[in-house]
Length: 105
Image (cartoon, rainbow, N blue to C red; front, top):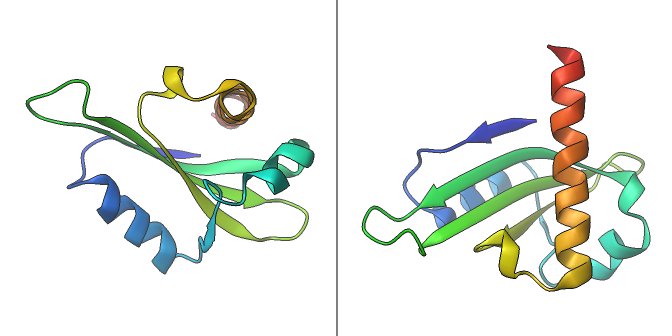
């Protein structure tokens, strides 16, 4: 998993991921992630904080289905305000990705 912090904006991160084949919008098609979260992994996390307002925070996740190879993007503001199950799944995927990253180091 690659985490990037300094980039122009969330929209730039989304465009970079789309160019890399991350086509599914998991903000809209979250049911697929919800029903089979174990089949997914986070490949990229882009974090953005506004220069003047710490509340202007966003996270852009590049997520891949390890069984089918399909790739997509999930975008969130402050992760703590995402509703229940979505938050739980994204946090679980992020923890799993960090664990895998540490094992590989």
